[in-house]
Image 1 (cartoon, rainbow, N blue to C red):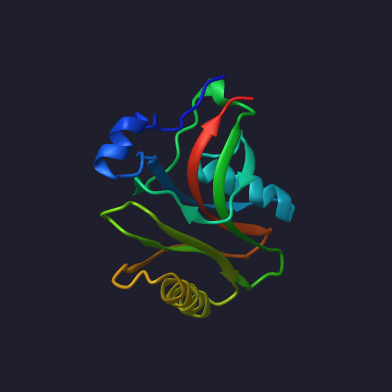
Image 2 (spheres, helix red, strand yellow; image 1 turned 90 degrees about the vertical axis):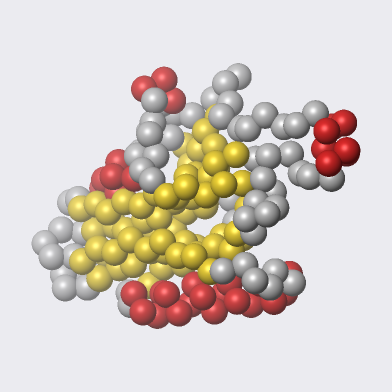
Length: 178
């Protein structure tokens, strides 16, 4: 079975350094799509983000220790068709002309330990989405004693002009073959 998960440090090294094993890179991508149906728009947005040919497995938003977050489009190798893609996904679809949708992921990330938290939300108002991402993460930070970790956000937006639209942001942890 092929995996893209980072190799863990030997347990003796983890024990001697007190550091968690490195997780690796989490890629943060966004996509926007249009299509004849909201589902077709979602598929086009997945293509735009580079993640269309995977089976998505959505995670609960905890960033493992040793993680590095990188904003970029995901690259899907041809041989990855149908593999599992572990991710945090925010997506919003709209079919009513003149309306906007905004999908966002916010996160806290401790650069020393590499651990953190993602939240995924969507809204018809970008400013309300931005507010809610910050408010949610502020509460989560207080609940976990993560003082000092700044809030980061990534938002994708789309406006329905003629055909249905979808906006999405996806944090990709790893792809894995069956």
